[in-house]
Image (cartoon, rainbow, N blue to C red; front, side, top):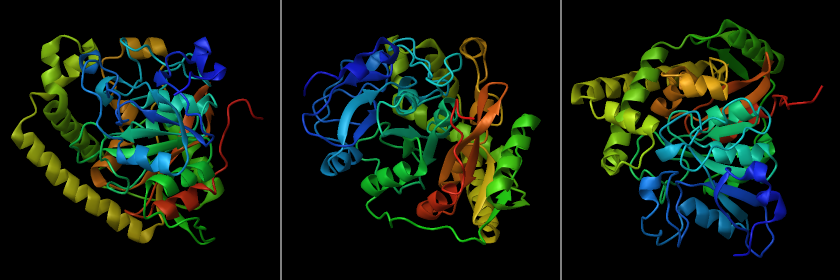
Length: 385
């Protein structure tokens, strides 16, 4: 592979990629999160403890699909270490700068992928989303981020290998490019759909900052036939998602805490996760079943559910450095990893200079219909009047 182009070598972009390159062939420029295998390279997941691991023997299935479609992979993107954090800050690799909001966190764990798209370095980028890790950085950087239905996109060659929550997702600056990306990485993608004029959306207001709920509701009402909706067990589902993420993360990478090479924030979070009991996990699984059914029932009445992608303001870099509990950042995202429904984050405005996104949630397997609804939303772009 040849050296990276000048635009990628800009010092402002230094921490976006863990590895930068460009194929000689032309093609749509894309980027891939560093927890997704590329043949011949070590997959470090942004962690020093994995820097010496053996190179991957083959491409992850999504990488194979990108190459087969003629896409040009320009780099592997930085991330919150081991995909176990939501700010996107990484002391080992460096932290990518949020292009649209430099004083705010880029969001995690798929920070580099979101930043690469927001900076205009690629048309789209792949991330992974276990509890909001596509939708949160999309919100922080003011772009679009889709978490597909669980199982819709192959996770072969994606780390951690075993997860009941994680999905390969897509970042782009518009819905059309999200759909283009999905047509490549989802073998059964059904093409361009149109949302009917009679489509109805239920608005659910989770706990959080009142100003964010107000703005998101007002924006949703501009684009959809909107009705109020109730979603029983939402907070329990968010907590259950945290429990399952913790147990599955400990099972996958907990052994790395013994190396002394894991960053302090992730190290401490993993040690806390090691204390999750079987009884807590069993209760979380029961919540998963109940909540998934509750979402299905609500979506028999509505074509989609609308709510904020983030219920609290995007943290500044200083706030993130001093915050002890990042839980509110993903409060509104985790429940839909637990339930398996597709969800998309759409930038709709700002409050006091911090970005706000509308989240739309669709029926399981109905990713095409969800994107069609999302196409009705006018995307807010930083700097536009």
